[in-house]
Image (tube, rainbow, N blue to C red):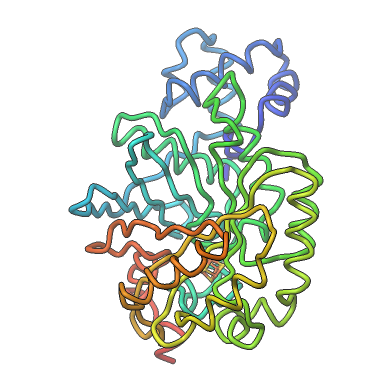
Length: 350
Ligand code: SF4
């Protein structure tokens, strides 16, 4: 298979172009064609010589995703299932807010973390995505919708910090002012809590927002929902979060999916308020998306509001995430799961 030219950041591309015997400024021209003009073939790069275009064609491809499925919600949320050209499929979601378009991208094909409330659990892990494949999700949707996406969240399939180097390189590509020019402040990384990688990320001194999938302040409950908690418990996680805040001076966002009669009562809220007291943070309360075969179901609106009000009373900023795409397979991994099930039984069925 030819190399994906989108896997290179601009500095690397300059080296690649020099290795082909060309001047490095050509790399900037190519970079613009890929990330600003969003071309799908080297032939469209009209200010590049035919000779260089031929060299590019011989050695690289543009790895243009095919859309396998597109679901459109009544609220405008759009969910894509992409063919990543090796027989695997991934999902990305486009959401429209007042401030512009946000894309939720996948970082891996499947996920090893095994969170019990997630549709990605139960479909086997295939591989991590390359940086070019991460960025191509944004480019493919911009082409399809003829829009400019202003924000990106790593909240799709996969644990981004388990694919650390490629995610960092994708951010470098997204940030570059000569291309997409998306500021780090417009990028959010969500992790299930890979503690050593949180320390590493803190030391990068990037301005990305960090979101932590917390879902409970009790180790017992969190371990039941998220096996990663048996490896890095809440106390270790909080220590890493404090380090991140101290290094970056940035507020952390804690994701808390409320599941009925599981983690949604007032005692859970009290425990959470105690855990987060005095921390520079925000709590994002998420009405859980029920998944097929999942044992968790959505909390009542009454409980969700009580939970939020309690946290706010205790001085913890908490908001309820607007439910988007509830009439489509919006929960992360649902669409891919259906696609895979067409071909093979899921772990639950075995
Ligand atoms: S919630 Fe995220 S980290 Fe957990 S299994 Fe799903 S994709 Fe992986």
